[in-house]
Image (cartoon, rainbow, N blue to C red; front, side):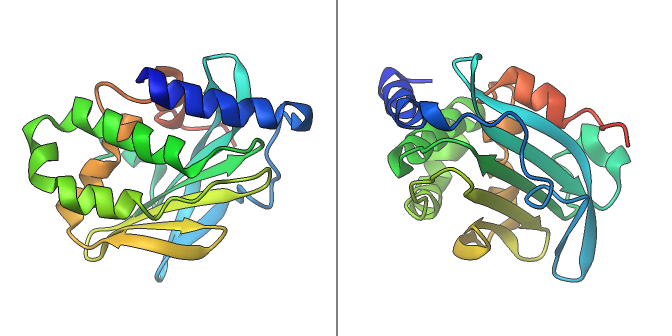
Length: 187
């Protein structure tokens, strides 16, 4: 992650240090969510950390069938939810997304840059208790929602699926987050 992105995230974390909560609210990471009429099961859950030590929230991955976890880039519907326990500024999300997409997509990033940057402009700052959803549907692409309010959509499914490289690509935002999300939770 670039020095500027780290500084922005660290600044946001410092603002929320007094609001540390270890576990995400079960109502915000329910066992099932849906996309259109497709029910998705929570297949995995992981802690979100900054600098590998500071708890900032939790993430969960929802799929129609949890055995699909190793093939995260398949064309099936999926939903990735991030629940935050700290304040994080919008530009930290925007800059980190671009940085990790450039690392993982190479020249494809240049081809898709305008679409990606338009999508990224929709990110808003978050406070404790806020949550982002990234919902992928093979016919509709990828949508971004904050607290169930849709903010942006990438209508091209190929670009939408490629966007998930931020968390699941070779050079992922967090290797431990990636490993945890790609490992089915025990129910």
